[in-house]
Image (cartoon, one colour):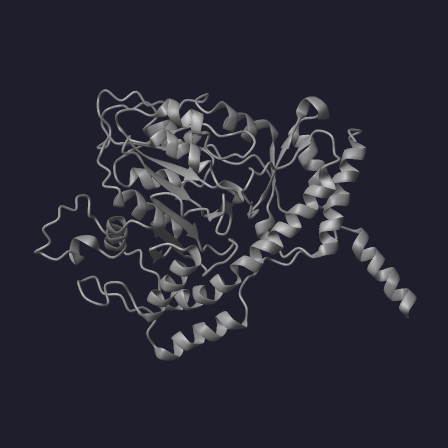
Length: 425
């Protein structure tokens, strides 16, 4: 009987294609218990879009925000119904006017750029660093004009953008920095948590992030004025401002970006688990990196000194000169070997139809354009991002599954087998 069990286990461990990978799930009994408390109370939301104590939501929203302030060591944490909403709030809080320019990475989820359009401002794309995939400060510097009002730095895949270099570039220029840390909720940049070093930062609570509330987002800032503007935009600003408010608050069009009590109750329990969940992801990624570092032609992630990576995904780059094969061939071989969660390329936002077909050349006829704009979204403006996307970039999406230790071993073995078959070991 023991021998039969050993044989069955051996078959299981040696067949990656037969593996049933369990979907990543950070929700447990604690979240179920907290959600049920809210359900039994009957108060699923406690916001009112008018001045008063309910303008900032119910007790679970407020408790969640207090927990987040302590966790991220910031003065203000504001929860919203998605990080997309958080980005719209963050951009709007900066008092952006039509025709203002905001520099942004082409390698990010589309909401990072479209949040700029919400306020009739102009996205200006700056190329990325080929080693970290974050926005390149040198390219940012080249894009700054008299109309530049902000930079959105994306902490892509789990690692922080070079925030110190960006701050040097913007010093004495009255240019604000927003950090989109949706994929990096507990990464460190020189002993400080990503997202907390800029004027406004934030994180996603979407279901496939490190922690989640189904949908949701967190905005953090140490600026009281920006925090108040974000709260106004979150909750129908135009209806919530007091009539005797003497301070000019332009562009205060508000939305219903409010997070519910159930999601907040879940979030309170999730934030307690974040450190542990990030450490688990780091352990998996580091094991894969150590197992693949001997493979010729495979470039593994570079992490900046004094920084950490939370590995939302594991980014990989192929050196096609060494491999002498195109990416499609290698990708197909890895997929056929059973490697899960593998993707080709990433995103080039400036190549989306939205920019190519409607606003690619700064033409008149759109409410946020002005006649002397010379903004171009033609192919070629971000050559590094474009080449990576089209030719050499692969990603292993660690966010999708709860990987077992032996499954990680099988993934490493699959890579080695493919490299042997391609004769590039």
